[in-house]
Length: 479
Image 1: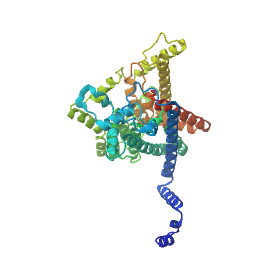
Image 2 (image 1 turned 90 degrees about the vertical axis):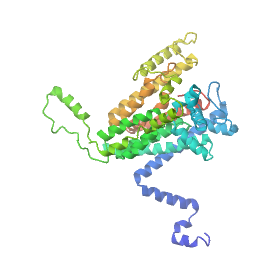
Image 3 (image 1 turned 45 degrees about the horizontal axis):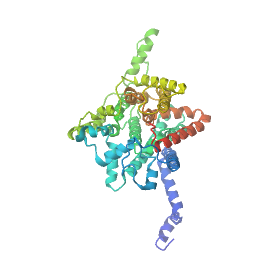
Image 4 (image 1 turned 45 degrees about the vertical axis):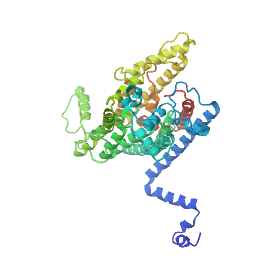
């Protein structure tokens, strides 16, 4: 204490404490003012964030320090954007700047340049909001990789907090205990097998934060926020446009916290029916909206605006406004029919199993896409395992959560499961799944009722994340 601070210390004895103790006291006081639910969400989200990201960078750096940078022969790895920062800089950037991260960094640095036609058409598959964020922070003097990691980490923190609050809201509505399920949902998200993408220079964490925020806003009846977040999500990823579907379902069918239902679900007033027709009447009654259409529904109109502005920009810049959809052809995807990529994935997994069981590589049973037959076979079987797990979780979502959650997952999976890659039909599916938070919420709810399985599930998931991250950091294709 000095003569300059003596009066302050007398007026508030807490100010006489050492700096750290004083800070802790006021932070604790601020958290208490938030209420127990928000405080718990902040605490659980912060723990999941720092512990999972510590694992990500520890594993990534240790892998590169031990094994080197891996096979970069066929990787798009531009100098000055993903490498060329010195030994230590390249080492620290490795868990964040691989594969698609290179494209985001190139777009942030050079732009889309649709006027160059086929030379830059590959960039059009990457939507603009995330690289615009990189560009903005880059103009402030922050290196683009650091800007990407910062945006991803902030978005991941927001997403984890939002998931915790959303789970608490849903389970409180159903009357079930929510604290443990919310904590598990946050941990399962942060330590998911592909969760290292959530802190890489990828748009996954930004899209996850926007989609979780949209669901929470819709549940609370904040439709202006829903429209804004929908527009931002549509400018982040191609699947962002499907968020209008759960928003509409929440608006018309609920559950909603802002209004009581105009047409409650009840059998009262229904005319008598025979046993044969009762089930059909019940189904038809369930299709009837529970809420009237009001003027606030107009707030949902801006939701497609993000995608529309991106298409308008491409057209005005001398490119093709439909390029974001045509760009899938550049990356080897083709339309096989609605969800028929599932059948292609099953066939690829079957032929891959035959390949591995044959113990030979002279005869190849399927298209490998340039990889060795055994490596390609292992990838196809791994992708099939992720699809099987997703189907189980989707069934759980449809049974346990409001219908909007299941409808969103079904719509979001339409792109990867309708546009397979010839050589690897289910390519990138695990990365698409990591942002489909309803699947994680169901799994957390399932685990909450089985305490003995919680630790093995989290340890197993974190171990898989470390394994896949080691491959990703050394330029091995993961998802």
